Length: 221
Image (cartoon, rainbow, N blue to C red; front, side, top):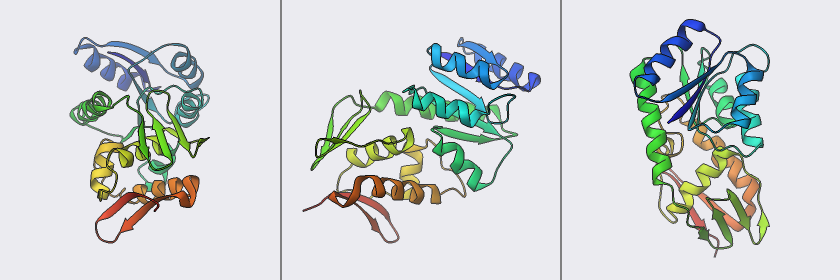
C-alpha cells in the first residue's frame, strides 16, 4: 500500500510516517500544497492523508483538484477545525473521511481499514434503476442516456442507494457505508447530500424520505 501524507507539522508527519512504515507501507511526505497537488496528480497512491491548513494552496484545493482530474484515490482529511460546516465543506470537496486533531493513531487506522473494506466490496457491474444507470468502473451516471455530473461523494451515495433499491436506509447506515464512519453530530450531512442528488437527478428518480427511518430510492412509476 502506497500512502501520501500531506502535513506541514514536521513532528506529526514523522509520527504518521513511522506508524505507516511499521505496517510495511510505502510512504511519501509533502509539506505544502503545491508539492502535494503535483504528487497526487502525477503518481498513484492507495491513500492520501491530507491536512487542510498547509502552506500554499490548502488541502481543500488539493482534494478538489484530484477529483476534477478524475483521481479516485481515497482521501482522509486532517484538521483542527471541528465545526460541522467545516466538515461538510471538506467532504464536499471530495474527501472520503475527516479526522479532527488531536486524534489517536488507532482511530486513524480504523478509518483506513473502513475505507479499504469499502473499496474491496465495490462491484464493477453497471447498476440500473429505471432510466438511471451507474457505471462504477468509469464513474459515469446516465439518466435516460444523458450524463449526470456528480462529485465523488455524490457518486458514492448514489451508488449505495442503487445497490439497495426499494430498501429503507437509515442515516447511520449511510454514514458508515458512504462516509466510512459514524460522524457524531454530523448526521445532517446525509440530508445535505440527498438534496444535492435530488436536485441533479430531477423528478424522474425518487429518493423518498421515510420519516423516523431514513431514505429509500424508488423508480418512478
